Length: 460
Image (cartoon, rainbow, N blue to C red):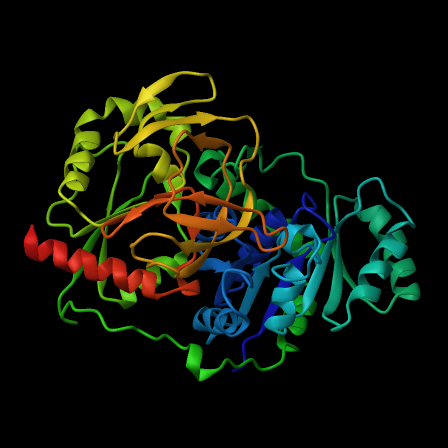
């Protein structure tokens, strides 16, 4: 299948990939190109910038969370028919599992999807040293994917001097530069960038930068590079397979899903997979609504920032009681990371203030001041649950809080160090824990959850 595409990658984090990707997407949209956006890796926030600020469809692609064929299938699901697809890389181009493996790196995804790479380099404070830096990345590029370079954070005057030097000595095209930005800064907090809705005037600033980019970056060359991408295929065996579920196909299974400022971390392909099973996702706000939606058969509480809204969540006692009552009646439920935190008896925020929460998990969530069990994991079921005993599913953890009771229903294992620990509260009707799960690593998890949801409606 023909799918013009490029990856925006960099030597390391903090090089300006997210801002440059957003501005490039805006330029392409202004040119009336049909565009799809993707984020390499498990990051939830960068796709929000693509979707909410640029209004371009975006989702994650990850070669640890899914196998290579599935990654190609999920890419083509959105890329087919588009003028161009832009994949934003993660960390440094070659940084994969534990920072030492190629697997799950930007380069691995580029190689799996045969995507040409545009390398963004923060050139601030550098001169001729850019040449050996770029040369090193080219030498390590055994699949010959790096097709262009963009210099970030430099002046037009210096760009004109260094561009010719780079192209005389290296077999790479310098596509342009991006000047230093003083008006806009994508600020971070403990889980990454601030959410797009929190950056004042961001849409307007991105539009201004798009006008700048059209004069400093050769967009025609970028489009030409995208058109050089090879045709891409996937094995038919990985196209969507739906294990049988007992609920009639014509019958919608209504799943209440928490969507507000506190709960906003969801993989787009997870949501789509639920819909492919005929589930109807019914959004509600634990912050602002007073009770769960009517006539729902199941409940999903995703990740996010409950710690920033602990007081408001706690003061919404009617919602806390509504969720507690539904869970006590056996409503099938999934709670991940922030959602898991919300289900505790109380949450102690970063200032040491304790706030009552739902109370379904007997214990507290407390701020640790450091990342806890950070990174990719594979989970193996130890108790009867949606996963089943011995079933495996992959996910990712990224949190500064920890629980006084993380559960014992699963065994988690890191892929490189093989460090393992017990975690997750699960039984036939619920799955609660810190890991963010990727459903395409075990789609039967989804069908089992929805089967239980269908049964709950019949008995409610």
